[in-house]
Image 1 (cartoon, helix red, strand yellow):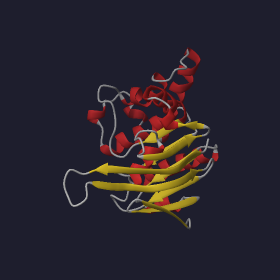
Image 2 (tube, one colour):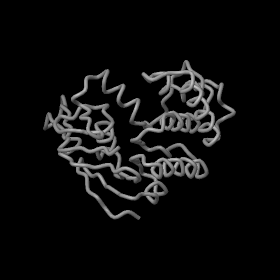
Image 3 (tube, one colour):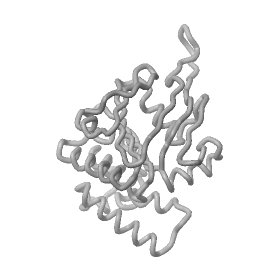
Image 4 (cartoon, helix red, strand yellow):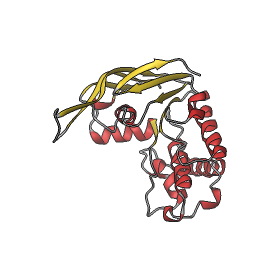
Length: 232
């Protein structure tokens, strides 16, 4: 499934300063293509995460349209958009995200628990995939551990497994290799590459040179302006 934007932009209102409007992302047309790894680089504060959040259906653009396939995300109401995102879009958020009351395995299984297509057969398939992803991530032995007992890197790997659980058609990863050592970085990038080979549209927002090196398409963001550059 392709993800496209037409003229999306985002402005924020400041309460202080010479200008009370800050344009975090200038009007942007963008296409995330099936089967490719697209990498978006740029310094902190350049608008990368803001763009990703708009593409993910998490942040309403000030103007413009975001489409996943034929579906215009912001024509859906909040509940419809959340359900669509859970079915079709995997998100690896920046930082360490987990529900602290759930075990590692339960956190990874959340997309299935929130889905509207539950069955004993689908639950068994999801559970088996969760086990496999935890093994690939090197945290299978932490299956029954609570997030409070895990390191930042372990929580990051858990979040990646969670995003991959339902084999999403679109995968948006915000600094997915942050907090990871070189060995685990290689594992994560391999999994994202595998997803793309399976037809998933993959976007990686990163400062990591290793991640940038695996790009099929490369973009740079500077002060809210998106530019395509040559992939390495």
